[in-house]
Length: 129
Ligand SMILES: [Zn+2]
Image (cartoon, rainbow, N blue to C red; front, top):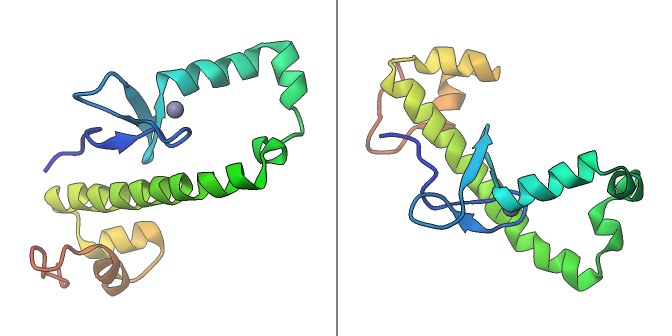
């Protein structure tokens, strides 16, 4: 198993991207960002006029209730994408023969707790390793 960007979405705007699409995604820690968002955020951070206008204000402060509501499904999809990435990351660790106990220590939980949360039922039944 390998971790890819296939089937991922931009965590900031919800645009689907990755291999096989025209939208290149980059990211880390599970979050993905598209080029359009990178450009928009770069302009916001480096244009003094945009930066001053945005300072102290959150985008949702300017959204209508309908816009706030419309963003909920994308927020949930982004959260699910990050959760799926965490599972893939644990799979990667297991492929590297990192024990459940070590993974649990990294997360500050017991071996059993991390196994119950991340083990792929039916494929990794070794709660003791
Ligand atoms: Zn985006």
